[in-house]
Length: 231
Image 1 (cartoon, one colour):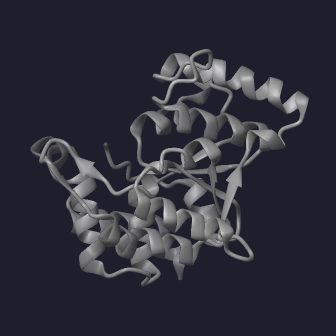
Image 2 (spheres, rainbow, N blue to C red):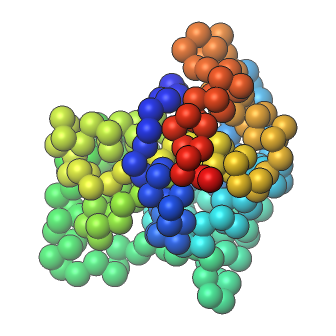
């Protein structure tokens, strides 16, 4: 995935008001695995570096129920259940049963618009890309703005909404690398751990090193975009 070093209005908005509802894709919770290098990060480590700080800094995180179904590892499922069942909940679950009949019709329409650009079929209700399609269609119906994603296809569905007619014109994507930077600046996770995560996700292969900035340049460019807001 390419790092886009341009200002993101969604990033500015959640910096200025972190109390907004922010919906997570599964890959913000499930530890990453890099098939190219055949290496992965354990959930215990990923939780310390990434997941715990995200929950600490954003009080109104949410997932769609279809994304919840993707959490099959016992350790992850237990962690998520604790967040959902906390009083008050630390994780909101978007449930399709909460949609009115009119909203269900609109949701179905948006799913049909999204499916040609994904591996998901609304008729088959298959697992591939179901979490992303269900999350994004629900968000569009409920006018929820911010989707945290690392998957390049999910980001394209949002960024190319007008061109592809996906019905996601009001949804905005916030990328993992943007929050890596934010956690660093808010001192919510160690610099060494965040640098490792950035390299693991964006600077691991020869191809990635050919088009993505190394850590120091990445931080300098992000400072140029956001340091005035953070201060």
